[in-house]
Image (cartoon, rainbow, N blue to C red; front, side, top):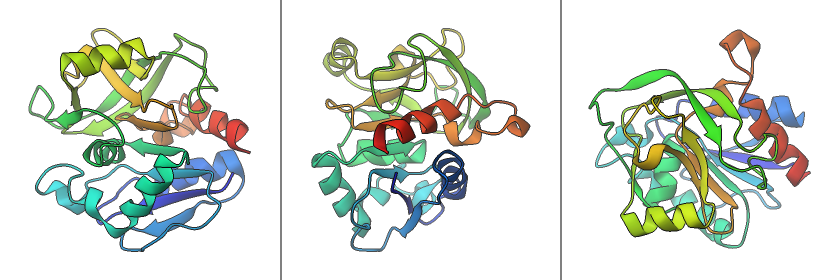
Length: 223
């Protein structure tokens, strides 16, 4: 699996996701600076990591969505190259309209950093093949703007088309996201955005290895 991680100013989980990818894949991903004009050729996976790109100025992910590299990311995503956006990466995917909806301030208006429990809604995608449908996994979150919102018609469509990837367990929603949504797919299920950080749940020393399923599933699907 040939993967690349896009690095924005103030990305802070780019190295974490690179370690998780190397652990699963046996080789490190390419680290691509946001100001580059193009990604490497022949990529099987593009990752937009967590962090606070551009200091979250203007709006989370809004400035990163206009970085030079994003033109190539969007073009490749539209041609079918899988893209994974984690936390700030999810926000960037919404800002580029590769995914519908927006990420708003947490309902508590406070930054939340803790482990959460969420369910895997289905296992028939490259991103979730390493899990069982309905499986509850424990993954950390760390965000101030993770409150997923979309109009009712969009939410109904996401539900009806099986585009909800992960959902916070009832009573463990850390941000007030609509319908407890923690992550969504695009229509073809080749783009995934999620707020929790699976890359920070791949080592027993960190308290959970539930994130391994995502990376192992991708490796099996894309190798």
